[in-house]
Length: 230
Image (cartoon, rainbow, N blue to C red):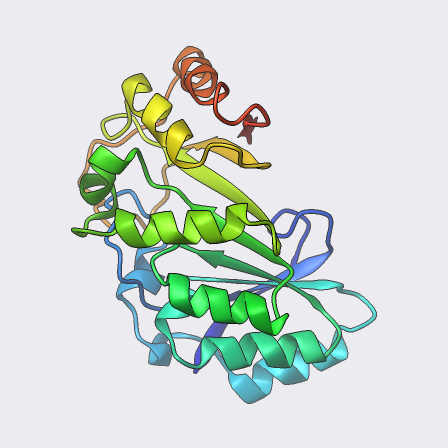
């Protein structure tokens, strides 16, 4: 495997001074994705070999206390569980970002104790999931990941990036029901970048009043729901 690397972040791993490791490739095609290069790219496009990555991590043990592994979709790669184990064995806390469509792999990763925090993007309500993630039949898998995390064996968060043109206030009661009882859920507003999967689209951010209505629609099911980045 090869990797992209953000050498330090205070944002990607809650409560940790961390670096962020990026993998390429994704089984979703969310049209508003802001990491199109990673989604479409190959390992040859990434800068760091595994040897170079671990050399870097070994040199940062006193400066960093966490590593966030993201993508693309990290669990798309059979090598990722071993990657997480190696990072954990160096003494770092490990966060995994995933789209939730590989529940069997995630269950094994959690059971092995090599991940400390899991962040799952909940794309939309069950009825509109296919449209928003760009693939058919994904919510059944995501729902199994939700159930796995609600069981409380690892720290976690759910989050939804809200996009004008893809999300409506009416989506959020059903989304809330799907993650009912979650201890941590965030709405975050879409932000335009120069690396969108569909750069010709008319997607835009949502105004604050609409975000507040979406949040209010979720809170009967997830009282801890909050806005992030506002």
